[in-house]
Image 1 (cartoon, rainbow, N blue to C red):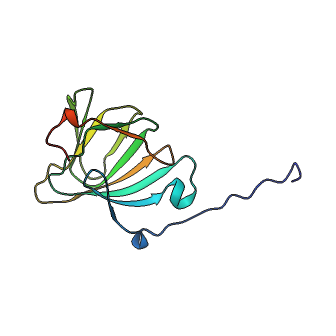
Image 2 (spheres, one colour; image 1 turned 90 degrees about the horizontal axis):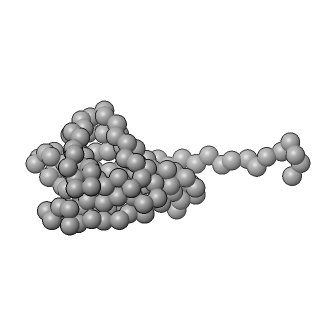
Image 3 (cartoon, rainbow, N blue to C red; image 1 turned 180 degrees about the horizontal axis):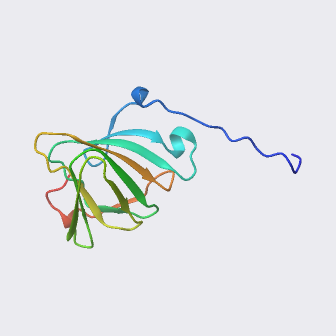
Length: 139
């Protein structure tokens, strides 16, 4: 390849309405949009997730990535801290940022309505460490 030439990047698109929903380890339904496996992404992981009424994820942290979250349909409670001692009450239209290694738990406080979020991480796949001892009532 000549010095003034460069490899042409390939832009990929996945159509959300055509993507399957699958069960997530925490009880959520998940739709993968961008990942290493799906799009050959090297540094981005993006999903859409439906959170059933009253669902509480297992407390956990991500050992290899940060997470950004946009609330499509709330409310959503994000507990965080070493003992989950803090909480943010997020509503539709809010954004959340979770640093790498931040212990957290997502909760749908509604007993009747599903919540929905878009997640983006700065790694093509997530590595998770679960901490079920922090909340025995979680999934």
